[in-house]
Every structure is written in structure tokens, then in C-alpha cells.
Image (cartoon, rainbow, N blue to C red):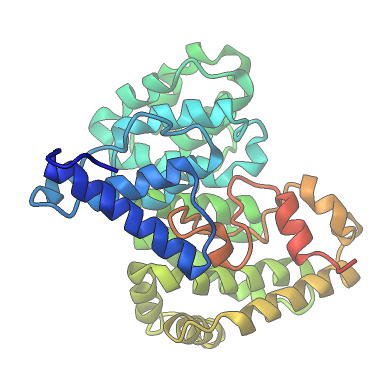
Length: 354
């Protein structure tokens, strides 16, 4: 307890933190970690007269990106509080946390980095340079991010940095002179990586363009003769609703798209909007689970064995998962999965009951 006569502001802050923690205990919520308590303390301090200035400051350096949850929160918050100067630090943390070692499972991160590079054209070269040194495996993510950035000079940038990535000359040549496709050229039907990359791009920019393409992927839910694509479509539908619960920009877009999408998509989009506005996503979750059951029963052999999904390249159950660390993953329905393969927790949650 603070001594009498101490700093009144410090005393107030301490009492505010104790009050918050007491409320959490009484409400039955899990006790927060010391890092989470520090985050709450920072947020409570921002209620003073200098709130606007404090909110624009970068996150505190201490323990900023030491856990995957820190990366997820940074990605989730980025479009509202953009700090491009922290992206290279985040990428280095991704490498250290082994989040980029399998590029096919790193669609979210690839799309996110691409979005940040694309929005910072004048400083793109400096930003890319700050990401180095980068191990050869992880360089694949950077190469794709440059190609996906949408910058008119992306080929020049990729060529300029090719000497720093000699182990990836073949992939670089594919994008510079071959059939390497940009994000705009990829089709969501090409697989879950594309959808994850689109979500990552949306998280970075808040732009309606990638979100519109995700909404267009609702058409996959109507694929009666392809259970794998129908499953992905079901997950798109469910995660769009879950994300729109907490993202007014996304909900506004969904409503706007009701005037432009074909009837087949409007039917599912109408259900997404209703579920988000009424906070009733349970039915869409059951619909998604039914699609998973159908996939396990009738899908290609490579996806029938549920227990192999934890190591597969698919991200069908993770599409668009907004990792709002401040809310807690449990409140999102299933553990959020970013960066690719299903987590063990998600497999246990949605897998067959033992």
C-alpha cells in the first residue's frame, strides 16, 4: 500500500489497478498474467488529460514481442494504431518464435507484411532493409510480401534485394521473370493460403479491397460437389461473422456489399450480418462444424484423417481469426490460429469427442 503523503497520482493508479483486479476475481474471469496486468495499467493511465498523445505512442519496449500472443495483438490492433517502425522488430520476433518457418502456413504474416510495405511506399526500401538478416527459409515470406505489396516498383525492390537472398534466387526469378503471381492475381479457390494472406492484408490496411475478396469467397460455400471448398466457405462465413462482431468497418462493408454481390452470396452474407448484429454466431458455428464432419466423411483422403490436420498446410479453421489478445482467446469461440496449421488446442476443440 502506498504511504500516506506519497505521490497522489501514483496512489490513484495503484488503487485503479487493484480495483480492476478485484473486479476480475469477483466476475470469475481468469487471473491475468503480469504482462496483461501491465497492459491494463498502461491503458488505465491513458485516461488522463494527455490521452490522445499516449494512445499514439508505440507499445512499451519491455516484453513487446516475446510471445506469439504479443504478435497477434500487434497484428490485430495495427489497422487502428499503425506503427510501421515496429514491423521489423515484429518480423524478427516471428523468426525467433518460429512462426515463419513454413511459408505455406504463414499466409497471415505474409499478407500483413505486404500490406504494411504497400502502405509505406516512400519508406519501403528502408523497411525491407531493416528486416535483415533473415534466415533463408523465412526469406520466402519476405519475397512474397514484396510481390504482394501492390507497389508499382515491387519488381525493382525485389531485384535490388536479391543479392541479400542468394539462397532464394530461383524463387526471385520466378516472380521477376516467370509465373509467380501477385496477391491480386491469386484466386481464393487456390487454397487457404490465399484467404489467410487476404486477411493479413486487411489487418494491416483496414482496406475494403481484401475484405471484399474474402466476402466473395462465400461462393465456395455453395460448392455442393467439392466438400473441401465448401468447408473453407463455411469457415469464411463463420469467421466473417465473428470478426464483424468487433469490427464496425467490416460490418459496414458487409452491409454495403449486399447491394453489389450476386444473390447466391447475398443469402449467406445476410446471415453473416444478422449473426454479427445479434451476437448470435452459434448457428454458423454449427454449420461450419457440419461442413467439417462432411469433409471428414467424404473429402479427399489427405484431409479425412482429422488428427493429421494439425500438421497440414490448410488453414480452413483459422481464416480471418481476429486474435484480440485483450479480449482473451476463449471469448472468440475457439482458440485463434494465425500463421497456418491448426493448433493442437483447436484440433481438440473441434475434433471428435473421445
